Amino acid sequence: MSEAILTAFGLVFDPYVLFVILASAVFGLFVGAMPGLTATMATALLVPITFFMSPVPALGAIVTATAMAIFAGDIPAAMLRMPGTPASAAYTDESYAMAKKGQLELNLGANLVFSAVGGIFGVMVLIIAAPMLAELAINFSTFEYFWLACLGLTCAIFISSADPVKGFLSLFLGLAVGCIGIDPAAGYPRFTFGNIDLMSGINFIPTMIGIFAVSELMRGVMSIEKVGEFAQDKVGALFRGLGAVARKYWKNCLRGSALGTLIGALPGAGADIAAWVSYAMAKRFSKEPEKFGTGHIEGVVESTSSNNSAVAGAWIPALVFGIPGDSITAIVIGVLYMKGMNPGPAVFLENPQFIYAVFIIFILANLLMLPLGYAAIRGARHLLAVPKNILLPTILLFCIVGSFAMTNSPYGILLMLIFGVVGWLMEENGIPVAPLILGLVLGELLEQSFMTSMIKSDGSFLVFFQRPIAGILGAATLAIWAIMVSRALQRRQHALG
Image (cartoon, rainbow, N blue to C red):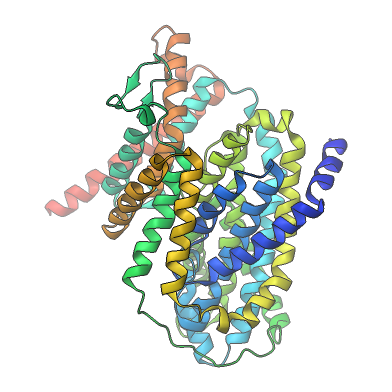
């Protein structure tokens, strides 16, 4: 173990890797601070570049850019009332109200410091929980993985949408798309229509670039004339008064970080939901709930800690089980496969140095957030002045080049455009894309584990409950299904009067 840790330090503190981390941090801050460009888009745009890197700098680029982008989304939220990423939307009005009251510096200082604290809290949980869960998961068979896949798909619907029907629609679309290609059990082509490109299935990376980057670009084009009003002309001392805030609201920071890590670890949840739940939690348990919405720092402290801790939390199921915690880790899983590092408990035994390198990079990224975030806030006014009519075509060019590089043919570009339109149509109609992504990622695992289990059990379903952990996971999954059916029946009865 100690040898693996020393090797990991050597891998991370290589000058080339440090340069990649620094460049990715600047890129993440830029994308996160631009309203409409999300952390997921930053990750999707980085994937084609990581194609030419070895595993550690590739993972370092994604980890750093993601952590920075989630924080940077708070900057335009406070200055312009326009969240840079959806993860900042929960407390945008609160932040802008503070800025209008002359507390922009206190708000941005709190966002910066508590984002770093929340991020490090999430990393500590990741460092402790991931190896422990990996030791448990090493004994998993196809029965446990089948129920884990079912549980992950179910959580995605349960959490990511207020309307389960739309969640199911998105999930089934993802599972259907995942069926295209060669049947893994029978080796027979499915839904390929004789097309050679479709024989290899739907390439994951151009699909992700389309859903997360191209759809965002389409939304950006529609709001290209939209310009926010700066709450303040200048930014003063960022850390003045922050000590008093930390002393008064340290419990909020701790609770937000813990809740964010937990929500981040749930498949399909992610930083956006973590921030909303933490903001509601802060208001529920506040001694001054009447101040919420008027420019009160309490909800900001809890939410900003939460969304950054969720970033690391989402890596727990991704690394241990190969089940993405959010859309970013869904892309990460694609990168891990691309680098020959199949996510799962085996990677902790076969390549422990890479796992420790990820932990070190996470800590480094959150520490780097303080000086680089400070500089980003100071230069935010110039950063936010970049015209969209230059920015959006440049990003589209990166998307096209990246998608082409993944397949080395126009097939990747076509996939990107098709799923860009699909993603845009879905979100414009309130259909969540997270279940689609999980269906696409977990569909193969679900099918392979089910088919292998059925062959092992000679067609008996009872075997799925005979192993202790498989039985617990199966019972938990069935209980969640029962709750969903019960709620649907209650809503129907309520609607009928």
